[in-house]
Image (cartoon, rainbow, N blue to C red; front, side, top):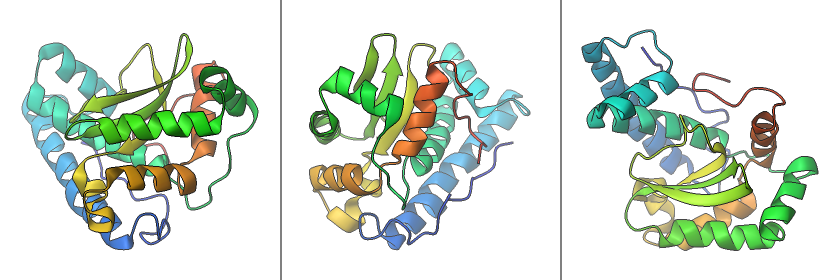
Length: 209
């Protein structure tokens, strides 16, 4: 059975970009519910003991939509917590070079990422990922995930479901994305993910600290 991970920082650590109130509601209510439902369905399907990544892949393969959605949302939220940090550092090294090569610089990446997330209709996720042709920005709908992607390695994700920002920003998703990108995006984590995609180290998996 999967366990709701603790946040890697205090609830108030991302203020003022993300309030403690939002983090409590988002982690303790929304994420916890996805984990609860996923565990019940994992038990029904006889998938106990499998990694969450394997559960997601099996649910996708077999068309078990409810299991996929809840398991993927459990994974996406855990990845989202790691995509943020109160100790933001600018991209450097291999990651900075990849951003320059793929987008022409950090400001161009920001514009692309914010547009992707702001223009995404309804609920979903905005991703920065590494693929065969370099870095890409994309969005997925609802519980769509890169957890089991063989082609793309996720580097960062921002939650664009309303519960991620409505308490702090109301309907202004674009401002949330701009502030998120500028102040709490975890470029150190993204750099480790990029290194893993290039064969140096292992990519993040659910349950990793």
